[in-house]
Length: 358
Image (cartoon, rainbow, N blue to C red; front, top):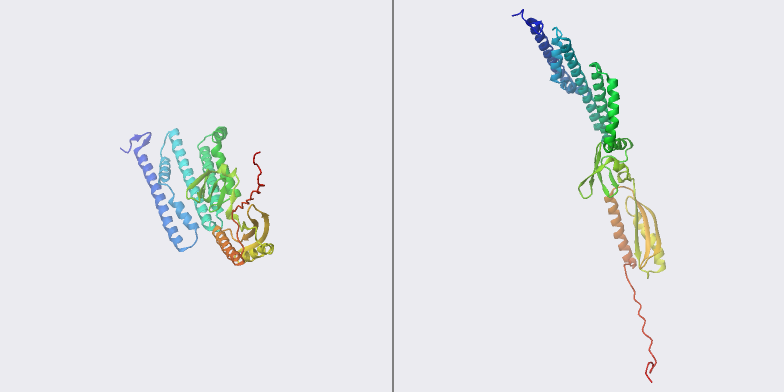
């Protein structure tokens, strides 16, 4: 029995190869679990995050990778055909590079999560920028590792890269809209015209930015629905970002009746100034008798609310309107409203006998 051969190798050598493969697989799994336990114990005692990363990396060691490497190690004691030996060697290298790619992807995820946790509260734009850059990093990582793996397998990557380049031109022409949105996402991430949480107006859409993706941006409108906008269309239009506002300029007008005395008209700007300055978080700019309207004398007032909050602005404007109404009522000043005066002229009396016949 022991002298019998199988595919050119004695049975004893096959058993030795099996023992080597099992030993490599068992040793790898045992070493992985031992190191993980010790690192986990150390991670619980220390506040650092690097040891947590190492625990996660060891946990991401795939069993299929261990199995492929164990089979490749066991095959070293066998006399195998050249083609089969090359296949096993290629499988081992592919498993190694796959595991390296998974580890690299885990490191990128860890770095992105760590950076977001530290910066997101201070800078909401970090979420968009880091998400886009992490996507680019992952694509670059997998592309490089695939090329290196193919090179180790004997593939002529120079011709492959040239072929991919030619094919990439055709794909780019076919996917112009998708690639346009992708590069628009990069522009949003780097230039930061708006970030998640900003209130923007673009075209007839106004709302709060909820998500900035690689192809679309999602805005929650004031009426409650979610509006999905193409990144390319979004950047090609004018965007008004109210979150970047430091203060709000307010202009409003009102009219008084034409019967208002001239001296009272001259006092109205000063009355308005005192009312505006009495409000908190405001800065008075001007108040003027602006023009003669169809049925009113028009006054124009400009002031600033020293906060971008819309609710605060409405509270201030309401307080100004109420106090303006009280002050005018006390002074006997009447607000104008649409009126129309009809002047009727009586017909002149005709002389007696006028229009009588002969």
